Image (spheres, helix red, strand yellow):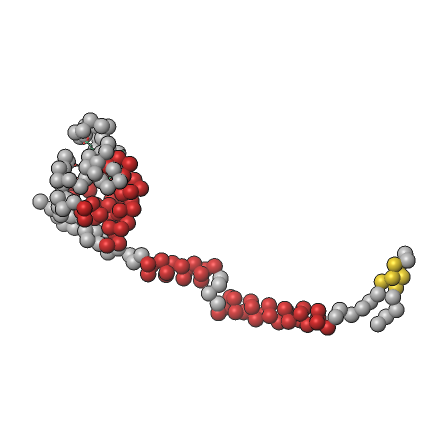
Length: 175
Ligand code: HEC
């Protein structure tokens, strides 16, 4: 130990750091090298890897729907597709329920689960009715018609129809 230095009446000693302290310091340096190597090359912790894993998990939970392909008779390609039906129900509750009632029993918009269809009951007709809406020139109920829902895209609209078809067997595939 060196002799303490005096500055303005204050003694400054030059004690070595305690051994335990130096060891902690040294061990943390060694640990950090191992950590960096493990983190970047071997772990699942980096953002990109964690993201990819989450995507995989999601895909297992929600498998892709059968690809949307146009059917010659204009029928709904998602008929009977369990994933689409579930998604369609969610879309219905979020968007259509406001006018057609939470269970499609009708409100401002007509009942969609009874056997009466004002503008047609085939997949092809119903798809067009939903996508293009029912403007003032076509409306029959005089309640302002229905806005077009093509903004949702065919996939979502077909999904809603797949769900409706499970609740209403008068919504038919084709004539
Ligand atoms: C702003 C209110 C409103 C919303 C939201 C709405 N509709 Fe409508 N819908 C109507 C009205 C009103 C009619 C009836 C038009 C007429 O007078 O002929 C209608 C008619 C329909 C028809 C034709 C029914 C038949 O008997 O031929 C279908 C199918 C339909 N809507 C489906 C949907 C779906 C699916 C959604 C959600 C994506 C939706 N609607 C959202 C108001 C709405």
